Image (cartoon, rainbow, N blue to C red; front, side, top):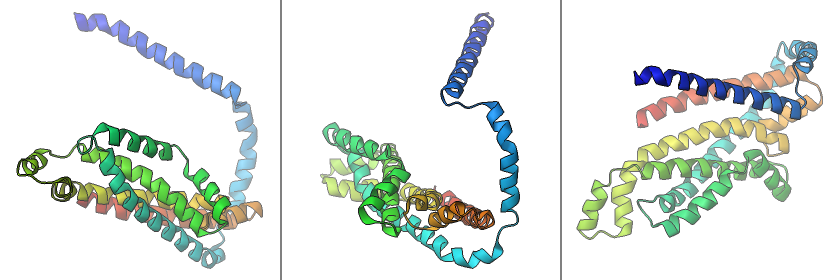
Length: 258
């Protein structure tokens, strides 16, 4: 009987939720000057662009191999450095390992870094170091650091505390506690998070070049500015192949680790 009485309430909540979302979308469209008419009027230009991108310029393939390899190197170095920085930060962020007067400030700094988009980080480092791979590596390092540290400290808080309590009972110090009680439990997830970060970095690194941070993104910017859309489509095709291949490999490896 109570279930039957709750049905009208659930329907009302669902209806109000849909109405609220519709009003938010409508208000956002007005504030951003977005309209269905503009989209429809732009369809012919979109069609013309797609026609100019087909077929891809196969001869351009040899020119983009090196930038693509640079992009993969940037992603790998950034993920590696980010992982090295993330592990100690994750330790100091785990509430079951350190007191709150340590974990709260560490998490605050971590959250602060995670709020900065990777593209903005790349633009800042380009302004500091100039155009090249170094700004991209630093940007991806901080980007990876934020992702890996957060995922790792959440996993640390979910570990089995039994071994830690047993080690404490026999007089183990904090270093032994972490070395023999925490690291063995967190090693496999940490490796999986590293691979996940590398996978994301490959996609991100392809875009960072738009602000001068090296890699294949610079080629995207160059071909788009010169309206060489056949070459752009070749870049998109190669990037798609590389990303899908890396995603497939890292997914299989992570499945074995977890």
